[in-house]
Length: 248
Image 1 (tube, helix red, strand yellow):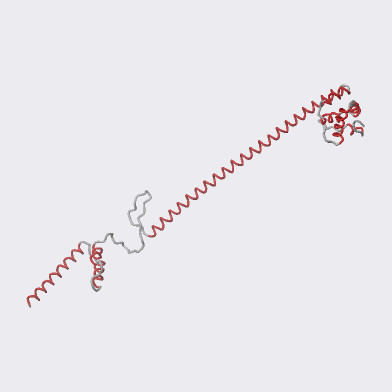
Image 2: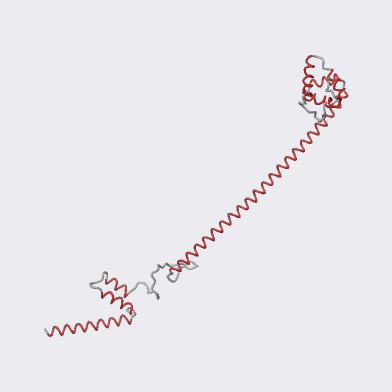
């Protein structure tokens, strides 16, 4: 029995030396330090075997990432350098915030540039529209002026033609003028009679003797009395000069 106790004591001493040698090896290779030792001791103080003891012990002895100089519970993400290559170190939460702010600022500048470009295009369109409107107005003004000139020329032509015809009718005999008037529109005849001297117009009116002729000249005189027409010259009716209308 005494031999068994001595053997057990010897085994315990050998285990202590083995543990001590292992600890010295781990410390010498950098696999064990004060923080790791404290973590292992804390695990062993718990009653019973901790859950996933081997995995936790392995994580302590062989961590997958090098411990940071200062422990941080904030999430980290890898950022890209300005040239697009992956960053050489893990970014902190502040780096993420700065990166997000830079991205937001870049997006804001891009949107602002787009908005300015749209404003410039709108100003260009407004300028083009104003130019087109001005040209259209100029074209419309030129058209009205042209039409007025044409109307003036046409009126002058009609006036010249009317004056020539009136001079001819004044040279012809009354019965000859009557025959010419019968082939004309009553309004045209009324214009010529209004432009003639009262005596001359009265003599021509007196030439209308037959019932058909009297009906025609009556219509002409009605137009003159009612001022339904104006002479091509814009002259007054013969009655305006003598106080009596033709035929009175």
